[in-house]
Length: 209
Image (cartoon, rainbow, N blue to C red; front, side, top):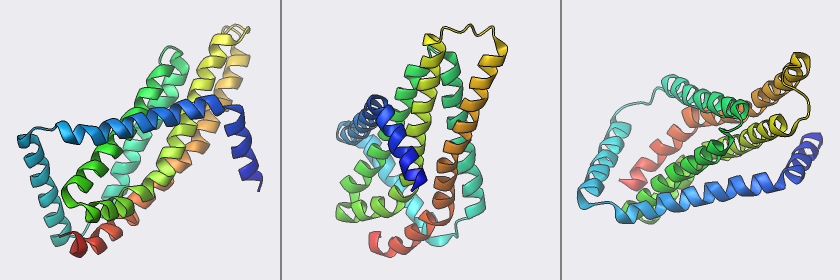
């Protein structure tokens, strides 16, 4: 109940930022889905060949979840550090919106391509292999982005000089701790991607192929 209260309070206080970031995500998803229709025949064929190869490998070989987990965590750590740094650079804060839009683009393109090529089977496959990890990753990224932008705004609007090291270091420490806590959402997403999503993929192979 306490956690729900904290989340509700944060969303209420930063409603405009959350709204704009979700809007950026939606724009990215829409752009990714639309991109499917403008691909050339050769590009579409290359993607279809890649998808076929992926399904064949998935059908013949067992997925090493540990390797997948390490790669997923590495990718998420890079994103976390980038968003954290952008909050410090002030002028880099708008780039946070681009990162969210790009995440949406990737999801929209992937789902759009699977549905375009496999129809309803592609929709089911997307639902069970792309949605699970993103239930944690996307909210985590959006909350982390709100934190980053708020810190950048605080630096800009604060009347206190950054030269006052004790004040700045205190704010920086608080910012870093909150960022670390929110990063847990992305790490949970990595666990889901490594240990749950592959199971769904292999279960659905017979249905998709």
